Image 1 (spheres, rainbow, N blue to C red):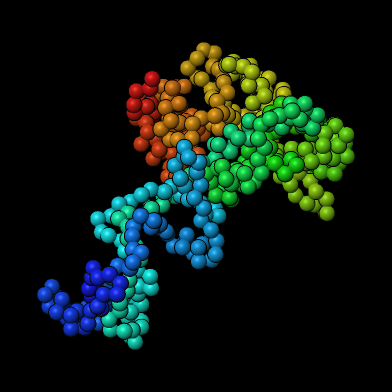
Image 2 (cartoon, helix red, strand yellow; image 1 turned 90 degrees about the horizontal axis):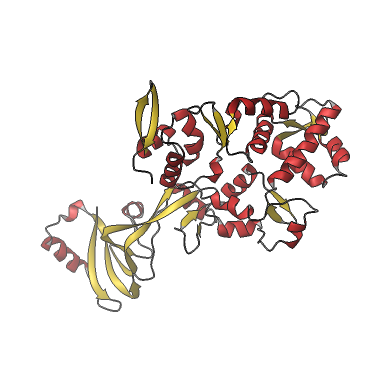
Length: 403
């Protein structure tokens, strides 16, 4: 333990001697033998104050980021709660009050440093540069990415010949624009742009209009069928040659990237098409103009609509559509997870407004993206829902009244 003699002396006042320090220790009934020999004598400097000083508590990983010369960025607009972002993570910021006064002392040595430096002066005179009664506490949080899709959907790309695109007055966004507007780290934003199948057109990030996207996908699947290519080996060059006269080549490649896995075989680029994603997109096309669809009729039409060789399954529609097994006949309707609120309580309110009681299997696709690091769907349900048994099946309903 280090002996600290506190002084309210201003700069320029007489500095304490060893005799004065020993007298203070005696008055305080402290045994010098139980303390480190070095003594910090503190005084307030002429500029000491707390108004412009902020403390930020960092975990070791974030300290390492700063020590490596990388930046930590605070993001948020005036109507948003600020978050702090590293290169790949996002943190909530919250002010934590402390009952102890926190002093800023430049060059102050810790007990460990004093032990390692036996040659240190016996009495160290230091000036307090500032103080604070609170600090910013960080907590890892989910990136706030819903706004990303919202911004890009203001002006979806309808193709090179679209008059709407040429006359549009909506803003378009570069990577730098999105970094300034979205409360997430750069890596999280770039990953989400891939998830939502955004592409860069003339330097701006765009989402394809769904009808235009389906038009491109239809061109590709019809070509695959006419050429009898296996779905696991669709050649890029042949697709660009055959379809390049119908649509821009970069759009053809983008749709292949969105609905397939790119690989190289013997120097040539191929795509393995994702059956589940193609079936899912066609289901969305069928459901988007219907309030509800008879389930058995939908399954029949859906299977007939997908490319030959593909098999449709209801589990391909998780987070996209919901089956109502209580209606007679059973029905299915469009319910996209990306259209639901981003905040936890609002999400559950919305879901319980749509359906009073949910099984865990049905609700999981609509809440699993809310799970924090190391949090389970079960833990979320325990916090925001109440369980009961219905005909031998566990179901969940809201903990609070839904208006």
